[in-house]
Image (cartoon, rainbow, N blue to C red; front, side):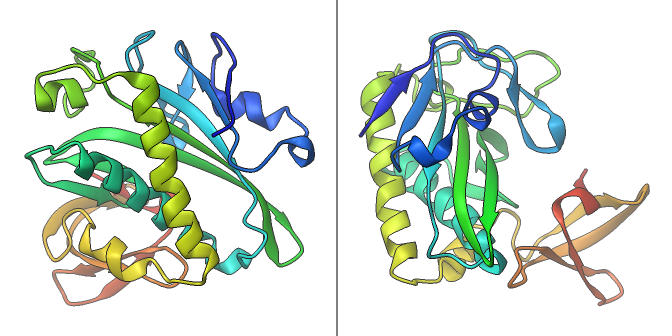
Length: 240
């Protein structure tokens, strides 16, 4: 694993966006022990105390993957995170909340933000930003549903060995993706709230629907109480 400590930084993904990625070796990890303005989905910030958690960006070059299959990369990365957490022996169930948040029971333990760059009809490079709550002992009051490995296991976990283990899990899933193995069936097995009803909001309108899965483009498929199936992109629906 080629890893680079980039020191204190606002966001590892923003740092990587400024690099000439053509000169960066694939599977290079840019990590920091002090990310003070991490970015999550929908522009949300990612809370991380210095020297407590894993905050890094991994560079991939999935040129073998057509652009219309880029959600396969999202699913593979999510499954790799689940693999890593499974190996730690957490007792609570681990699930993937669409599209790529990792939940332990009903609490978020990991978030990812993937920035894909295209070349023609295929992916060229992907900046995979990951924030994993490891030794975080407590969270701000405005994050009531967050958890960490420490809170789940009651003991601290060394950060750098865990980073190596996580990157190996990503390599394994990435190699399967390179071989053309569709990750969708395994992703659905781990999908948070699959087959269960939940409250959502779209265009300012709240509604109840059952989580039915994802379509081939990675959109969330919901079945309304009237039996209508609807597909949503990330910015078109919000979990309530």
